Image 1 (cartoon, rainbow, N blue to C red):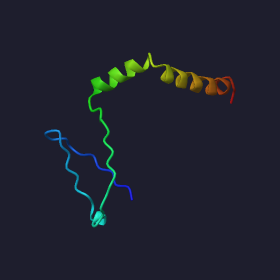
Image 2: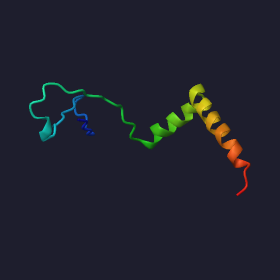
Image 3: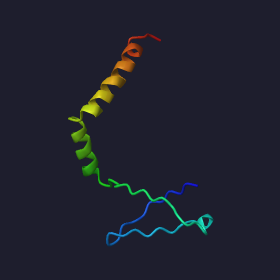
Image 4: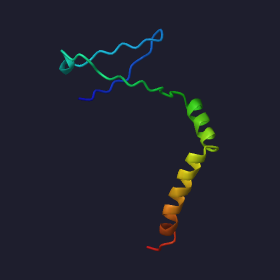
Length: 74
């Protein structure tokens, strides 16, 4: 079973209250993701993407996929 919950970090610690159907479970897997929560941080990441070769290759691939469709008439 998968259970996803967003938690607050307090004093560099996270407390997770598991749902009732996790009773008697001996082990769970916890994945920690760094959540970007400010607009300024998101904009900085977008700016950094402008120089990221993988990002630019993905954009080029999408452009190429749509080039043929853009020239079609309805």
